[in-house]
Length: 465
Image 1 (spheres, helix red, strand yellow):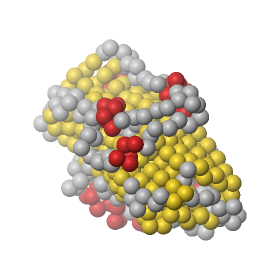
Image 2 (cartoon, one colour; image 1 turned 180 degrees about the vertical axis):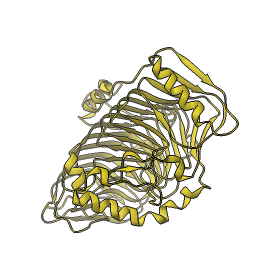
Image 3 (cartoon, one colour; image 1 turned 90 degrees about the vertical axis):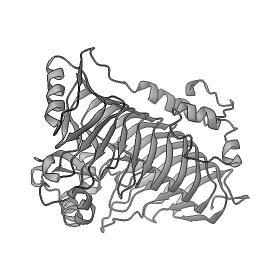
């Protein structure tokens, strides 16, 4: 549909049609005011065709017709599911279908090429919260730095044509020791970041027993042709779906409902040709974050995130950003398109964040038609994000176009904060509207700003000269 919208066409997505597009999953979660319902009646941006072309180019995996259907066991079901995955793979690929019921799993599931792990309606994969179950360590990335760490609960390493689909639920027993990891991680976090900054070889970065770095729920590491569709992720210790060095991935119609600290929904990490659509989030951190490695380690690898499309998603609640770019972005983030998203109460509607340790570049970021019922900040672009440790690698942030972003309440409207050594450049804000905003604008070290229809508390705002 997007590709048929011309420069002068008109588009209006009603509340009813939007909820129909996302399957009605959030019908009672976001209250749309008359303002939010009326503000979409104008021409879509000129770049919408570019986003449509990228989304159309993302390849979705298909699988042979072979299906192995499993029924729950009474105790630890890990071996049963893993054996079926390996058996299906050995026969050339197919689907392992997990039937309704609670499946208690002590240890990770390892996905392999040409296998679809399908969770039927009513199926609940409940992973143990004991860290010892997720050893030995595997190669992974933790907040932008490579290491050998605890295995993600569902992990795929250099697999092709691989998927997690269905209507079932994936969760973690948070009554176990993992519930305390967040408050015990400081020592390991500092050590890993120091090793990344010093360029320590990967084989020296081993973080297993006694070192508390929480693992992602589902991680694809170095994979190609990935699909995550339909599943529900609930109550997890860290990030939901984590794409690392992964290409051609579709994340569609999933929900992530987990409000602990650092509970991101989806993290795109040095990955390309990614489509995220019709998903629903309640998260303790960013709902969707686009990343590309941290500081020296990210610059060493130099793998960007690019050609990313996010569309028709609902962020009911986020204790951080609805959409974030960064803060780990040292490999570069470019060509990101965010389209038609609805948000409830979030910290920041659209957040581009970095600091002076990062280096790298964020460029060609586009967004259109994003509405929130309330936030702390509507638009934030900053090179002073926390975690700065004294480096001298100013990032480049430039060529940003944000169009039709609105909130019915905000502490701050437009916050753009660059640094003298590297000002934020070429930002175009069009049809940015906020009501009941306490601080309309905070802008420093920014150049080539264009405001077109930026209205805060009913007053048009002018870009600083």
